[in-house]
Image (cartoon, rainbow, N blue to C red):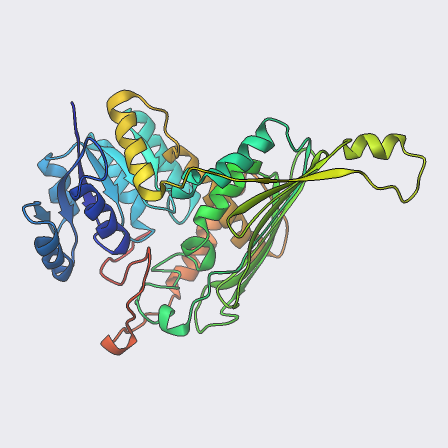
Length: 393
């Protein structure tokens, strides 16, 4: 094999963007073999913008046709593991959009199917290609910041209007989307949290439902977490504030690193704080430090970078930057946050996945159906989909 022939299932904003990149030759050694969507309007768009690319309106028929080597899944959340499992069973490599799914119990089935198939499995966690996050991960892992103490991420620049939520029948419903800001806007941030700082041992959260919008899922969340070594984390997010903040701060006993406004700043202590604490005779001592701003020359390769890495992995054995198996980690954090809020208690990991699915299913049963009219649609739905697909948990 000298090229990876790929089919894209779901031609919404993200699927169409991937299709255009591949069709235009932006991904070396990857070829667009087919596209699939149940919306005839999307297929008409594809006929005009992706001339000559075979089309399918049923993904089962596409998978049975075996005209490609790999599939990219860009459908609503519930369908990600369902389609992936069938893809693995029929011999395909799989790259799925985020999140890995809606509940970890189903994602474990997907991971098992991937392992059994032996095929390549990746997730579109394109923020892992960002040099700033790669650098801070390196600083945590190589001990530059010392023993980790705390991670604080305020990520509130996700402002959305009621028109956004009214633009799709599936949007912001338990039955259609499976959650709100944690499942739609924050999977990348939750992934980066665990990728950089590791998985916590317990989660406590407050997930406010419809605090700023007329929706049935969360639009304002505060998560606190604890770690085996005594470190802690705090994650704050919402779609109801403007102007918002995106500030990641990680502290260790050798200093503090901050990412904000696309800049990384490291406050390096001359002496580790734990050493000063144990040896200083001053009750109100201070520690000399230097301020180091890191200039990252390279740029994030984003979605194309993940597509290229996926291709290189299949053809040349390059290590995956965003392994599909790791998608369960970010989803575990959001599932545990929901469960903590629903039960009003701290959730120790690993969590009770059966209990979470039971409580989620109860919410799905009472989930409201929204009628979407032409007047309620909006143009900019970056990275999301409308009601073309019927999610089925």
